[in-house]
Image 1 (cartoon, rainbow, N blue to C red):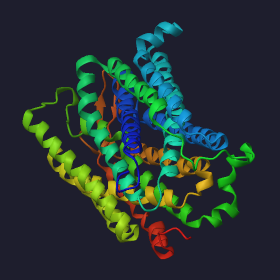
Image 2: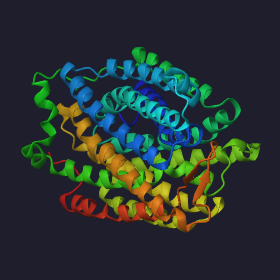
Image 3: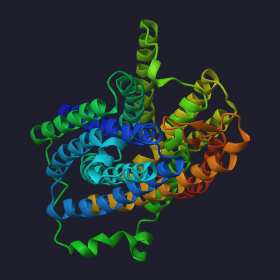
Image 4: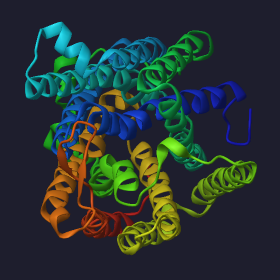
Length: 446
């Protein structure tokens, strides 16, 4: 056992499944968007539609499969099988192209070919999300809640907060270089294979926690359990924390679907010609080491000092960082502003995620993953990208670099800096539920 009370095997699974899951989600969040925008010829409105459809799929899946995992009293089978099927569906994107859609449906009209290809990407994204949400959102997240408690969740969430950043850096460099060297298809196949292998490993390494007991309640009644007024009232701290998560995620989703498109087409970051030097690699390793060490240290400090001591500074950093990058018009200055934004985002994520786990009823862990997904995914991934898309269409014409001619000669709007300001405005509202939580007290009432 480590000082956190978790075994090395448990930590291995937390890191492995957390990291591989974040790799897959990051590719979906970043490169599925650029794939749809650059290679298929979709618009920012198509990106918005795909993100919203994926969010709805994720929430419905997590409700159904999370409650089912509670009903059966098993997590391992859902995690492992979910990851294997997730990997297979990721691979399927290697075969989606305008040429294949035209051939399969015998279409020659360009607009119809584009519409068919865009539709295929969106539909398969929903199918992939079903598999990923089964393994990751419904089962793996419930498993983490099962195996942790309020004495070590800050530490675990500190590690969990690093994994998306680490995955993002890995995807930015590795997947970006892979796309430029061998194309999207080969990269989708390679990523899918990694997710499949991870799922297979889970069959031999994951143990079902003792807390995941088989539920004897009515399965269909359980699906609406979290919407009952009496349940909301009895778990007021949980729903207040979820409201904060919702606003935090909404602010992030105003920007996230369009971030890489913004970097590429507005700031001129060339993903196809990354100049990877030894000095850059050393610098990246140092930055990663600092991020990992810092996040784990912050997690331990949160466990020791309490979440209420850090939550207001975290919201301030997150909001200020978003405002800062709005004013940054070069890659260098953008990177500086992004540091503040990322630190605030990571710290706030640790606090809010741990708080939600603290106040999740232990006997309804899987069931409440669906409730969490409404606040953390469905509302943010419908409202956030919609606000981002509206902002882009509203302000693109006022920028010299506000439009872009894609590979098919079509003029489309480019994400503009105003999306960061819109996100910052949303982030300000996080203070409301956070202040309520501070008054109620972050700690779980015994």
